[in-house]
Length: 118
Image 1 (cartoon, rainbow, N blue to C red):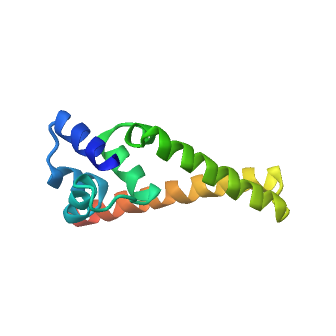
Image 2: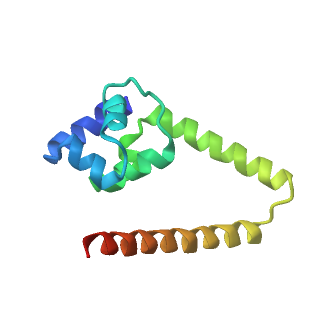
Image 3: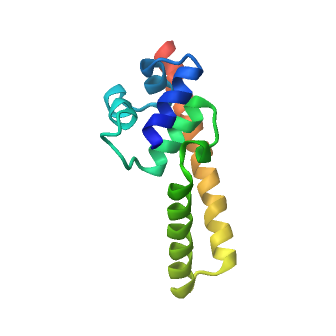
């Protein structure tokens, strides 16, 4: 399960649950529920944050069946978008806009952290 993998990687890297929570900007209690498999289906966004905080690729946290389900969900979403008229160019444009938005959001977070330390 994903919780067991997160806990194993975290412990192997010598990271406490408090440190992981701080690095990932996720509550300690939520990470604990994931690691204990109480929360069996955390969102991809949460898993991405945890993977980044642990400095591992996202697919390392996911087991093969989760990856296959995720791939099937993406294929279905893309089929639906194409069926509704989404073009390849529009999809490329959208992904470029999301990259810009993420960079702005990261920059804003850095600026906020600088203000807190001043």
